Length: 489
Length: 93
Image 1 (cartoon, one colour):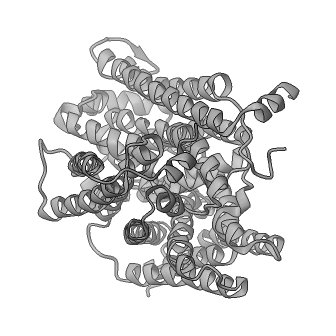
Image 2 (spheres, rainbow over the protein chains, first blue to last red):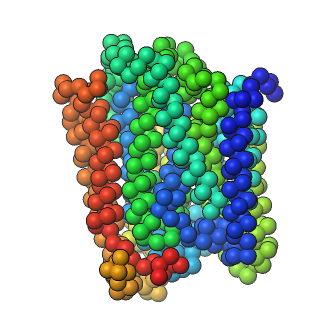
């Protein structure tokens, strides 16, 4: 490790992480003596509107939203913001379509996870096991991307080593998630979302100041980069990207298990309604704010992205260039908070997939003390495993992130949407859709096969639908008892 | 507030699920509306030679305009079309 960073740059992050651990310990203390599983995995269904909105937004917004995204905006221009703004649909869609239905069913079935609901709807332990496996597998990919992205940003901005960054924020997030469970994740996510917004405002302010003001920067862009003011960016932003992004980060995100599980965790419908409004406002602010800042970075970085080592280095270089030294540490908390909140959100759902969906299904009468130890240990082991993978970062990490996103959507989109809203959906259809769709998605990714140069999510989601319909046509209909629970008349 | 609580208590399970299905359909319609707005605000205005704060009209309408429209949609959904119901949890008396 080559440590040349200043402690001043490190201090705000250290304080932030100590606060996160403090919240986790406080939550753990408050939950002592209560129903462990319900508390640890869904916070005993007690989230209010504001926290529900913030935790959904924070888990959804990853480090790539704060690093790779604005770097691309620097290169492409306003077409990138036009594409990224489709993410304003993410919160009101998932809460509007699944929020109440999942909440009603979870209370009826005493469900704690999305897989619990899938198991009850399709009456299939095998499907539940496949769903849990898919969650753990793809979540590990996404978490690795968050660890690597966050640690690289940390190293580039503070001067400390990549490994120091991993230990400082990576290990700490594993520890506080293991200790506090879902409730701690929701509260720390809220802090992360707030700090992300502060970070955006701070960076925007210093970019404008260093670039000589808004008017000067925009005049320069108009003169030197006219392509940035055109939606197709003179061919750099083809329609295929717009189309696939609508699927990948817009419509299909409603089926992400880490978002749907928020529907199980809130207190009442007043809170849900508030969360739809607050979440939509916040996610739009973040997306437009950080990508606009990426574009305005032209005021301080006059070269091409390649001159700074690629689009991923635009925001770190901007931070180092424009921020006063004493504020650099504060500025990176925003992007790191995006990374931390995504890791914690995924970690607790991955842990629940193993303990609640697999272990407890076969050992329903396990003692509470044993479950407590196993749950915390599982969370720590998954986090630790991803941490070890991140120590030797694989290449093409951002592609792994998007690959995982598409895989989860292919596996869960039709299973959840048709399963919860269509009586004709049955076990065979769901099995074919989840296994067949996901395998074909992975195969097309591995082979680099595309149709019309569209992202493989289009193939995965289409095949997944076709298989679902074929399976439901030929399979045995769901039994009346199940249908009475899911579609009461 | 009393009215809301009354509404919560009056619904049967079947009515709740029917209401939730209707709200999901409203959300789907809202999505379709947002997609149309997005298309018109961005691509639709891309040939209009008007600038606001040094930005072409499409860039403003296709970003901040879409964001505001999404907030408006969320407001209509959550405050006008969606109803409060008793979920059966501790928070619902």
